Amino acid sequence: MPIQDKALFTSPCDVRPDVRAFKAYVPGLTIDEIRERYGLSQVVKMASNENPLGVSPYVQECLRRHAATAFRYPQGGNPRLVDALARHHKVDKSCVVVGNGSDELIDLLMRARAVPGVHNIVCFKPCFGIYPVQSQLCGLELRQAPLNADFSFPFDALRALVDEKTALVFVTTPDNPSGYCPEAADVLALARALPAGCLLVVDEAYMDFVDDESTRSLLAAGTELPNVAFLRTFSKSMGLAGLRLGYAVLPPVLAEYLWRVRLPFSVNILAEEAGLAALEDDIFYAQTLHAVRAGRQQLMQGLEGLGCTVWPSSANFLMFGPPAGVAAAGFFEALLAKGYIIRPLKSYDLPHLLRVSVGTEEENTGFLKACREVLA
Ligand SMILES: *Cc1c(COP(=O)(O)O)cnc(C)c1O
Image 1 (tube, protein in one colour):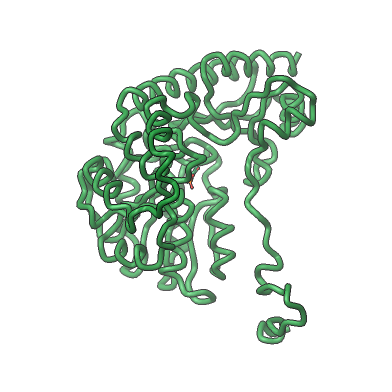
Image 2: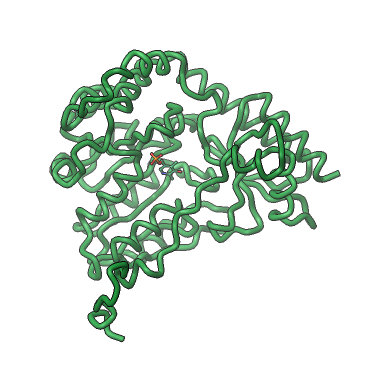
């Protein structure tokens, strides 16, 4: 049936044909769900790459102090936050756009640049779940280059999928779910190899956790490029996932368009204050990086000691496979019953693998003990 005919509505609840086939993004399970299902008193969530140290005390105090301002609309364009981010990254403030999580910026970039039914989006496979979901909602063809067997990036294969109708190329670095991180030089080479009309989106949600940002991040290196947009978030290293705050650093012309199409108050007044406070809180940030790096090492050694296959990670999570002969799904369920929520990677088409977020030292120790018991 031609799309026009399918678009003839017979019910007020009909939706676009492509929306009818829509599959929602699958988030990690929540603590309450598992506590109830298994009647547990204590449940540890290591599934969504949240900050193991929680919300910084300084930010909590700031939120309490500003609670009474929540009846007001935030200042249009969040100028104080934009200024602070521009200083933080040593870029001009005309390059910064803030959003309701970087998820909003992914959506805005697609909708502002790509014409439905005409343009395409290019990324690796597997990739962060929001890229396919949002491309589908925007009516855009998604082209994916399979990752190498070791989860490193086949940049040439990615480049080969790009044509004159490619609006955006997404690269996640460090990558989710593998934790792999390419050299900034390789990302730069990709940016230089793209056709004139194409924008490279470098999603640096986990860049804070790499060992050497200057060789891994083009943004940290201060490389100004006319065809690259960087995405960063307060959800991971800053511990603010629940407040929804992310931002893009991108060419000013494009930034200006995004500000025009963005819903006016998508970054709320408490998220703005929390973001400002988080940027000042160097101590909490340093503690977070320390906890993540030490915890990553602890989990890596512990899981390997149990016979698991663990991929090297530059992020705040590890991807791993259970020992030979143990099914990932069963291992995941057994851990749930013991009160440890991790992430099965079925929705990434990796049903044999699992992802665990780095927790506190105590949580990591408890998780490894639970794994040992399950495997015994
Ligand atoms: C967690 C994550 C984000 C951040 O999303 P927010 O909307 O800012 O919470 C972005 N990209 C990737 C790859 C992620 O894993």
